[in-house]
Length: 90
Figure 1: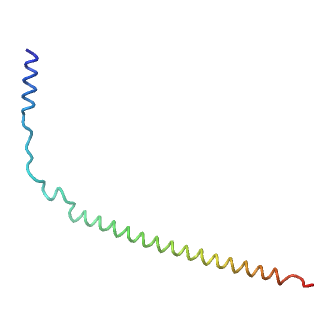
Figure 2: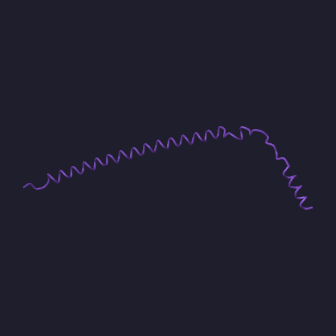
Figure 3: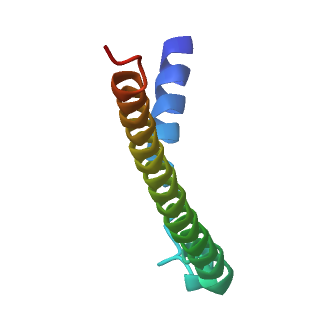
């Protein structure tokens, strides 16, 4: 008796149709629209500007390091000349 009722209930629940889809979703709920495009565009512009600034700063640091190396080499060369020629002559 109870088994029969459970069996009928399960068959009835399994046979209940699910709601049919209403069709394709609307374009407004799928696309980001103008606001999404503008936000993405602004993020891309900001990223490009940051990359350009970073490249410029790295280049500047590299040039400063090269100039510092040249100045250090010139100072070492001048100090070596002073040590060789500045001592007492015999």
